[in-house]
Image (cartoon, rainbow, N blue to C red):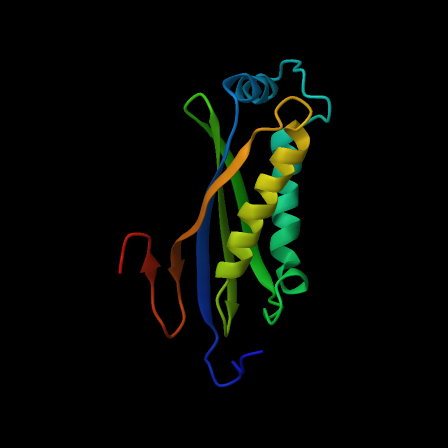
Length: 151
């Protein structure tokens, strides 16, 4: 594990995004749930379960990723939004005050939320794809800020 004891504590934020690509009929069922209608998804509330899975994963990142520092997280937000007619966008924002960043926590939250969507919907669509998981922004720390698209 990297020794971060000499680093100053700073406010740190990381934002990660990803998508779950699915059949349009599967996304239509998720939209039905969002509207409060009955859907044919047998496991229940897809978005609620995925949000909770992402939040729990962010808190357990150090247990999942070798050599990752356990961090006291100040906030975790996981949002899921339909995009087009065949994908669900997942975005996680994680904050802490600490000596190391929360990029891994944000990426883990997105990844596990996507896996939860897959698990909740696999009965109707086994061909779903998890795609484009990436860090889009980070602030704080000695290395400074990062925005997707910067070199």
